[in-house]
Amino acid sequence: MYSQLIKNISKYIELNLEEERLFETFWTEKTITKGDYLLRNGEVCKTDNYIISGSLKAFYINSDNGKEEILYFAIDDWWATDIDSFQKQKASIYNIQALEETKLLQIQHQSFQKMLNLIPKLERYFRIILENYLGSLQRRIIINNSYDATHRYYDFLENYPKIEKKVPQYLIASYLGISPEFISRIKRK
Image (cartoon, rainbow, N blue to C red; front, top):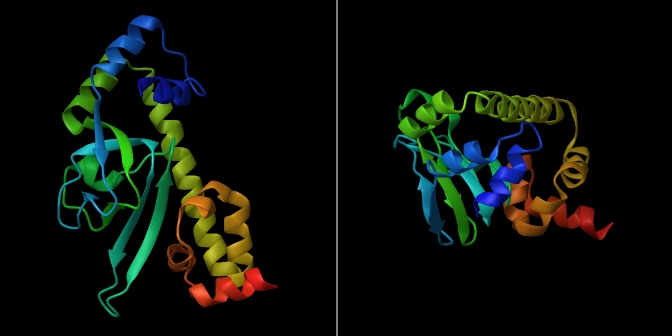
């Protein structure tokens, strides 16, 4: 399980064998089943979570209409965490739930801080991961504010083909702010 995360890290920084062994001591394995919550609104996010296999959705319930609003999906080789809640150890404003059986590597907040102190080069890795995440959020805001539903859907397919294969159409529709019927009409054309 650790080899997949080490391989992900090695795209950005190199850890020597001693650092890899030390790194592994901070993480624990966890499996959650379909429908289980990794995090619930109001709880403090106590772990940073790397997905070995499976898929998750992050969402909140719109207080105006009671509908589920999808914030993001996370699949194999991705991260799923409420960054603000994890970093500040304050209550989360959203939920993270398994869409299928999901295997994770988790690190507790205190262990995360200790790990960064003992292996300082990991700061660079996590900075790059956060920069990539921020860039995707900025891109999503621009796409949602500037493009019609058809363009948003095709952009999603182009940028996230693996998610489209793993996640039900109605959830993708929620993420894009369109109806599942609209996606069905696009697919029929």
